Length: 451
Image 1 (cartoon, rainbow, N blue to C red):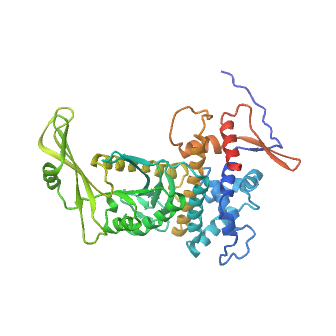
Image 2: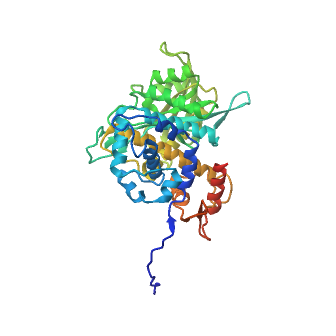
Image 3: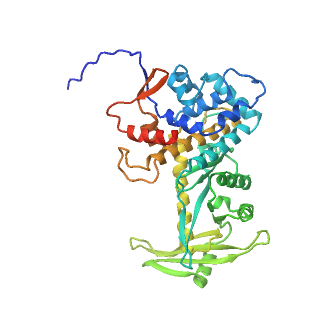
């Protein structure tokens, strides 16, 4: 094997390996982030040379490439395409970026609020497709809801001295942020950074209430809140009842024994023998508590095993119980099916952690990392929107039929797209290679966002 010995040379042409930032800039132009931040005054930086919009939008440009460290801004400081694509007058240095975010985070929560509000308003303005979940009701009708999934996902920041890092329930030192995602596409609605040792239910009711507000900025469709057993609390149920939204919340059985539910299931439930040695009981009952706004349903599934799938007999029957609080009137098996889809939110966590490189947050200050995580959620939504638009036509070279394009795939194929920037006759052009397979998709998305 004799590889070609290339002659190395450096061109004077302006080449870029991240043409997809042009799509990010177009999406951000549909928001009021820059207008709101330019009027914002921070103590210690009343009239900065590098404006607040330049700082935050430059960082969003980094995050949309899967780069979260502040020092990674340095290679872009002389990159004219980076500045033009995001509409920046100045690109901040690494110290400026770090110090400005520290200052904004320590002053108030306003920048986080601006990011979350503008992200929600952008999704509304784009009219992004939101796929609901559906069930069949006893009357033969079909009901649909947009799922709003709330969950905590630990971030491993072990071997660091960052503020707020402590032992999480995963037995690693880190943070335990709360997330809210909307629709089966998993658009980010809300996020709140929390110390690793904080209980999952602490401040959950307030987070749920804010998440419902942000979700309603995006859509007018009926919502279905889904939360796991860590958030089995009356205050969460009352928030949903007061806000008139349906919910499925897994019940924490606490001191309730499986045998008690086995007795209830045998008496009132419907039994199905799935195979020899395995019986499944399904049922529902009304549940009331004087602290609840109104009665709700309890749906249960009890599985009794007397034999393993391989034929091994059990000396003592094994009983598994799952119980759910809900306002849905559909059959118990449909409630359980809807709740199982809640596990999809783990994939959304994974994309934020790994694809955007946000698990090990860049700052030593808790408030700054909270702001970084909010910016990360905005970047995640920008990339998710691009990915979902790319699926609307079959012009992508990837022929696999999917309902949601992973953030990593969007970054690798549409953000990290090479081109040459040409400035001539007061026009700026991007010229792509003749054999650029993702160019038709890129062109279609760009034109749709420019209209």
